[in-house]
Image (cartoon, rainbow, N blue to C red; front, top):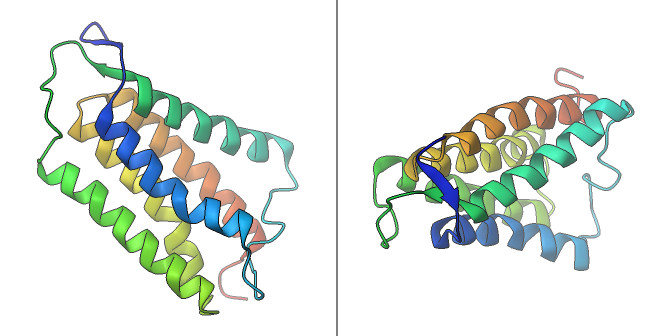
Length: 152
């Protein structure tokens, strides 16, 4: 933590914006078949935990940076993995808006953002982002399992 400081991360901003864009479109223009409508947990600890962790990840991605970081965007394998996860996430959203909403698409939409955030944290060497992303994945999956049970 000694090597981290408050600053603006262009890479974090890109990851957050790319991940949020389909969600904004969904909120403004929900598809006629909308399996995700009302997707929430009945357990307040899980519901609030998911939202708090999600907001914390966005804040950490945007404003926590390496003390001595390069000005360029990272090009490591983990940075590419973050972009790939976002790309797959967009494909899932396209399928979702086209009415293709089976469980594999829904669960990919649940798993891919935390994978992207985790990878971005590793790429930027801002490990609190990765740690929060791992915990967020657990909460995100618990909400999905409650609303979209497997094997039913």
